[in-house]
Length: 291
Image 1 (tube, rainbow, N blue to C red):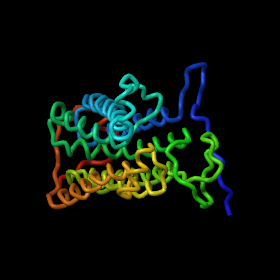
Image 2 (image 1 turned 45 degrees about the vertical axis):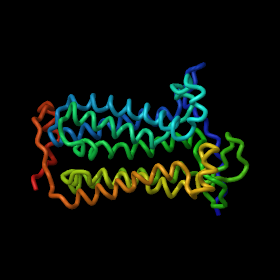
Image 3 (image 1 turned 90 degrees about the vertical axis):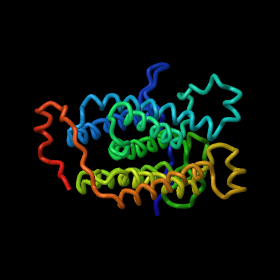
Image 4 (image 1 turned 60 degrees about the horizontal axis):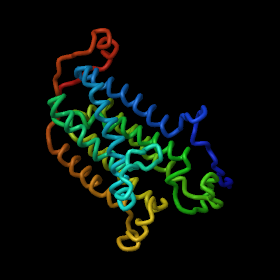
């Protein structure tokens, strides 16, 4: 039988006086870099204009940060922040909500699709959600390094005793549970795109993404500690917390998108290939097929 894990990781990878490089921020940076390269490869694969990449990245970064912060403020602690408006921009003090980030990214992608790509939003979503699953897993590992957002008490041998938070009994490492689900989802979505060409069924990949992200989140919330005190009353009254309540619409949306995608024929988008010829030659090992 395994011993419990005493977890006392330093949230900072490097500290130089008042300046720090934190694991959480590094997870964001690595995720966005890898995500950019994945979407770049997809754009090259389909011949989409390269200049769109930087614009899309800016939209997604802005949506992620602003949306995640405002999601935490309005969904979880509006009672506090309504009295301390000047503290809302202080994201370095913690307080980001994935549901808020998701909503803001959805809005950002629709704006990008209307103003820049001038293609149906499904074309962008079915690419973007793939690296987002990877980023979600990396961020949960960042939460682990911060010793935050963990679960309730457990007797399971893989329980973590979060020493930095003053815990003396093992708790569910829910950060690892979620990260494992998101990495598995990332692998599934990559397989759907590159092996099965299911980007040709608009909204299918996005639908699977919503279910693959928010169904595990809904279930894992049952063993996760509440994030703010007001959730205790919500659980007592409704049997679910805020994270679960916010996950339900996305799960339903995912099911709806899958049904819509499977009821329609495959599509093939065409673009003027704006990538340099040498880049095109490097990716010529896989041709986009008409169905």
